[in-house]
Image (cartoon, rainbow, N blue to C red):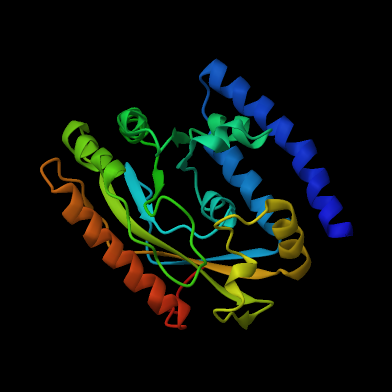
Length: 264
């Protein structure tokens, strides 16, 4: 109970401050929003006892679209704690109290997948972020899973890759990224344990969050595959299948414990 209260106190105290600072930076056109966001996520990871391990070499020196699987709300904290990024999220998140405002200030791209005509708007926003040098994270399944498997990737938003590759002056890279939850209190997690972290389907958030806080700490492994240049002429569906295969292969290997020792 005490841990839950301390986390709630941090969230409801620091999140409004974060919003104020990032809003001010945005209005004044000053840098720093990314470093502040990453620091905020790192503190939340510490409070929630989330240990993040990195395997592979993420692109950091140029525009990149990270294409990943999606398991939980914890994914946002873990990935966001590593470096400044913009996420692609469902439209409903933008209406959540505090969370929605924070997400907007952190360059989140919102998409309503039920309305196909809005997909083009989301693609345009993704291209804008990438062209400005802001890394973008796309959860290509379009939903979250139970953490034990990778769902089929959707190809609609991969049009951003083709567009960005054709428009970017210095080129844009695309890199497969895998998110896997591997340990609970230092002990390897089995299939039956991963739903502790996974938030999917019709699960209510508050009971899920309380259980997570009570039973953590957890380890998440974020693995990066080989990046490649975005090609404006590439077939969207073929590219999606290739990325899905790469993420599926990395995730499967990680979940059975084949994680290289070199990580941070």
